[in-house]
Image (tube, rainbow, N blue to C red; front, side):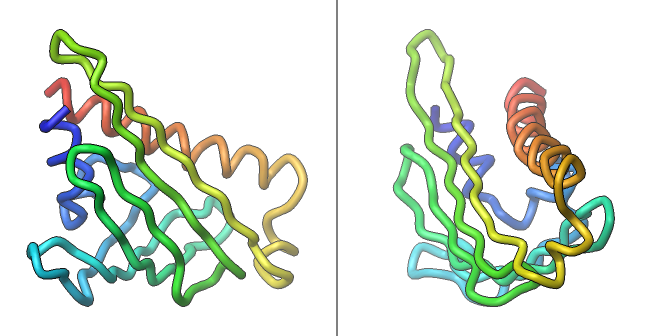
Length: 133
């Protein structure tokens, strides 16, 4: 599990393994030197989406985040890690957002469902590939 936690906690390297993330800029770090406030640009398929996110860490267990400013009306998410033994970890990625009125006009219906699927699948598959490399 330590390897998976090390990967998700290293926010600056996330664009290397999460295809939907275009860039990540660290704005503030916490007392442990981990990124606590970042600005992320993501490929929203229809429009590039920018979010300023605040992160909180639970060592070896995961992390949570909340949008403080951005294109979405609001956005929250988390990684939860569970040690399965024998060097295996179950990583659960959770993301919930409200696109708001303006972005919602561009991203709605089947497009919105496909975007949600792409963003969550991309994160989970990217973490798996990075951990196995």
